[in-house]
Image (cartoon, rainbow, N blue to C red):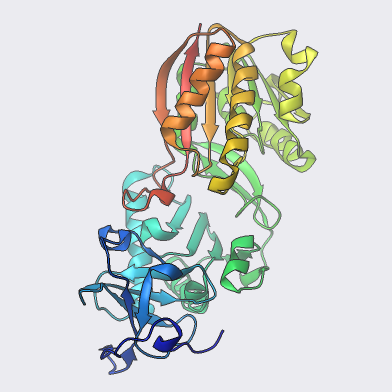
Length: 415
């Protein structure tokens, strides 16, 4: 978009810019007057309409300092006028944003994973804002790393981040999965490819001691979903000797856990032939193929089908993809979640269990619980809450940034 002067935002007196450690002038972004901005309370995002003026010229991706209208320093981050989120805060200190800064941030994230995870070699190493590196996702698959730089200010430092990963972890390979549509909002191209090495993209991942094959090139997102790791262990207490239905099974993580925890049989449904093929392979990999059946089908259709209604299950698992990615689509998402939970509840034997999930951030936690309750009433079933969880610990939550808290995992007993 080119350089942008303060006059393009508002005609106000020019302020004196901050000096960084090398004596370079850092542009100041000054927030509008009126109330407390959420960025002052810990959020990392500043939108275009929240800015009063910028005191000097800048290039997209540059580091800027953010001040309140009262001239109080808020933090330092990167700017991109092409994005509605024009500034993302990197630090609350006037510190230098260089290779050492990124190295310390990644080390802090790694230390956190080692502290809380039993299998830290297989984890989401960096979770964007929640690890104080907005716009950066790094997933660790043993000696292989998959990288996403989802914002311009982070994409500029991609080579530095790759060099840091090489220094700290000595990986066999690093792959870029920047084929995410959100990059278009930042004026960035969609791209994928090897950043280091030329390894086989089909990898074996460990989760709770079980093995899963994934493809980091063709798999969803970065190739594997780590965010349900702790939640899957809930099955241990409820599936022993039971008949299980797993809808939206993807590559079979819940199904394999259920079978390994002693389920008598697991029927799994997904609309993707590729995912089902990989799920079957994962069942063989974990030696549970005899107790698993995998079907390519639309889960909505199957839940309403005569073949599903002709039998009942001790446990029904619903882990669909996000039904909404915006507030404007929330009504449709409510109907979707209501329908699958209604049909799922009808298939649960009295005394059995429903595991139901939502990965839609815009689906509020209490709203999701209410939807399940309404579905239970319409199905003439009574439910008892067993556990209500959120995402795994390698997807940490910052209370000041609600967007970091997206996953709902609700386990109920059905009567």
